[in-house]
Length: 260
Ligand SMILES: Nc1ncnc2c1ncn2[C@@H]1O[C@H](COP(=O)(O)OP(=O)(O)O)[C@@H](O)[C@H]1O
Ligand SMILES: [Mg+2]
Image 1 (tube, rainbow, N blue to C red):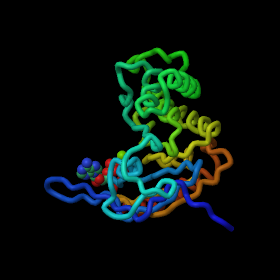
Image 2 (spheres, rainbow, N blue to C red):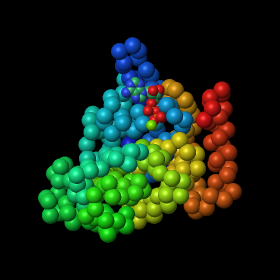
Image 3 (cartoon, helix red, strand yellow):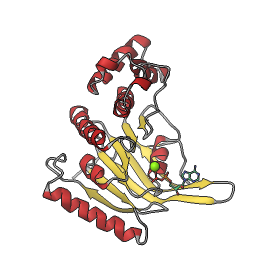
């Protein structure tokens, strides 16, 4: 059977930070592949290098060893083909409205003229159900609404791959659950490719079709699991619990005396 090349290929990636006092090895020989329309989750405890890997895919960090290719080309810097959504709810420009925030990314990257950008921005804002707030400023929105704008801004760019770094971690539990379900609905409609970072086992099972389990510092791949749930939103599904137990076992085995 012919296998097609993955969209993103992370091969033996070791990433180090050089500080004045020391050399910190954040990840060690990390490898995984992302195919088109995958919802790949990076799961592991705090400090295991999840954000570091995402920043390397984003082109903001260069691996000390290994390489990352997108569509066969080695990533050498940031680009509009990889858009990030962060945890912080203050990632919007406070002096621009919702619509201007979304349109700005499009015009700044010269993906669209001002008129086209306005139209595309409105279309993206509609997909996250915020059309009534298109002319509102970020400070008037709730945390969940701000994250929806950040997601709209990202998707409006039609990147090859969407990079999400714990985008719902700062939200209250109910809003977080709602956002998870909305993200799945959005994916069902437009089938984008994403890497989603979280330290929540449940969030990983809910959102991912594949989960990369990372060991603590320095982050190494422990296991890669396929999520085969008919209805991921059913958190009381037997298979959901099986996966949660498996992940627990792998992560806790590795954590040893760590407490998470
Ligand atoms: N700018 C930095 N300088 C030095 N060490 C860093 C820097 N950023 C992250 N680290 C270290 O790299 C490791 C991985 O960090 P990070 O990728 O933020 O983990 P995670 O996102 O999984 O919580 C941690 O030990 C962290 O302290
Ligand atoms: Mg992080």
